[in-house]
Amino acid sequence: MLNLQFFSNHNFSLGLVAASLQALTLQFNFVLLPLFMQKVLNFDTGKTGLLMVVSPIAISIFSMVSGRLSDRFGPRWVATAGIFFLGLGLYRVSGLTAESDVWDIVFRVFFIGTGFGLFNSANTSSVMGNVPREHGGIANGVLSVVRSTGQIAGVTLGAFIWSTQIFAQTGQAYVDFGEAPQTALVGGFQTTMFIAACLCWLALIPTLIRRDTTPS
Image (cartoon, rainbow, N blue to C red; front, side, top):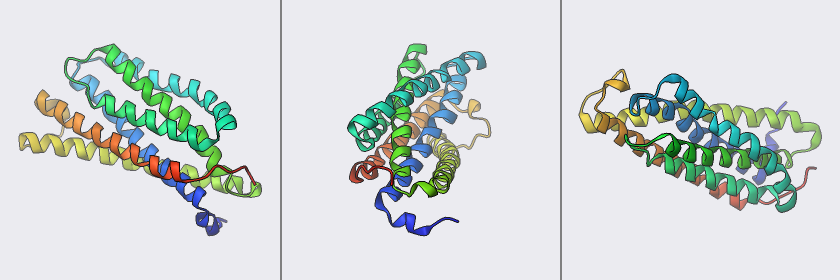
């Protein structure tokens, strides 16, 4: 059973808060950016899919780097760097326009993948290091639930904000985003991703104020 006393451990709880914000804001990018590429930039599905692979590649690379850096500098600072780069990537994505090209997207999503790769491994290490080893499975389950909840909320919130922004600019609700004027699509997307970046950077607070610990 879940021991509720785990949540009295500030490092454990702060790690969960940071993980939820990270998962929430990352979904803004994974769900909305492909729509932007197809509806605004008129990329086909193959080209869109290839560009979305850039982020997982960066995640794979920096997840391995994160472990080594955490051992050397402590997971708090590595996780903080990860959140910073993730937020920076989201902020840069908010600057995409109808004239953006492939390399504009590659550059931005690479930052997002870098941030996620650095943060996820370090934050998981920090969370797991604040519960007894025999309860590691339960703690990992809680962390997974928090991430999944954040991802679901991110999909819903991201789509809601974008559609709300389109409605605010056009005065009309669209079932298919592709039917909206391009200026409204771009403006709504930029505002939505800027909000995502700000929400992501909020995770700097719980990430910075916790302390590094060793597994018990």
